[in-house]
Image (cartoon, helix red, strand yellow):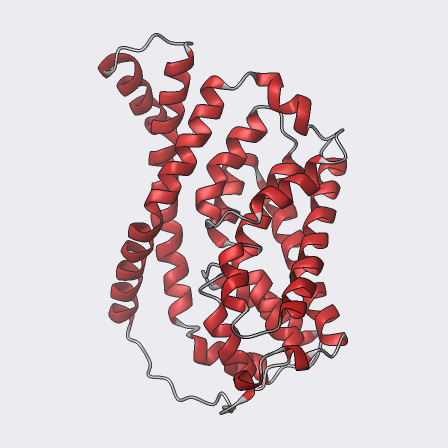
Length: 322
C-alpha cells in the first residue's frame, strides 16, 4: 500500500464528494493535487524538522564554530559541508554564523563551504525528493550539493582574498572555546517541538503558494508545453533556470512542489533541480546582506563559482537521467 494512500483517499473525497468536481477535469486535477500535496508536505515537514531539531540541539553554533576552527584545510571544507546538511538554515540566516566563524578563526574557504552547503543541501528537500523521486535522485542531489560546497570553499580559500572581507569582521576574534550548558532529554524535546512550530509558522505561506502554483501547472498547463521549451535537449534550459531562480527567495520546502509539478509536465529533472538550488543557495536578499560584510567583488566570485557548479550539476543530471 502506498505510504500516502489515506491522504490520497481524503483528497479524492474532498475533491469529488465534497466539492463535486468531475474526475479528469482540469479543475479537479488541480484541486486534488493541491489537497494531497499540502497535507503530505506538512506531515513530512513536521516529522523531519522535529527529528533534525533534536540532532541540532547537540550542535549549537558555538560548538560548530569550535569544530571547524580546529580542522585543517580540505578536511575543514568537507566537515563544514557535512555540518551544513544538518543545520537547517536558509541562505540569509546562515550569514550570522558566517561572521561568527570568521571571528573564531575559521579559514575563509571553510566558512564559504558551510555558507553554500547550509541552504543548498537541505535535509527537508532531501527527504521530500526521496519520497517524490526515489533514492537515486535524492542521492545525486546530496552528492552534487556536497561537491559544489566543498570545491567552492577550496577554490575561494586558494584565491587568498581575505582582503575582500570588510575589516570589522575580523575584529574581536574569539577562540571559539565556549562552555555550553548540557540540555536534558526533556529540554531537547521541548526545544524540538517549539522549533518545529516556529519554522512551520514562518514557512507555511511559502509552501502553500508553492503548492498552489504547482497545482495550477499540474492542472492547467498542457503536458508538452514546458517540455517543448525546457526539455533536456535544450542547451539553454539549465542556465536560464538558474538565472530565473536567483531573484526569488524561498526555502527548499517551498520550491519542492514546483519541482514535482514541472518534472511531471516534462521539464528535465536537472533543469528543475538547478532552479531549486539557485533559489536556495543564491538569492538577492542573501547578496544584500553579504554586501554589509564583504566587498562586491567577493560576492560576484562567490555567486559565479556556485552558479557554475549548479549549472554543471543540472547538465549532469540531464545527461545521466535521459
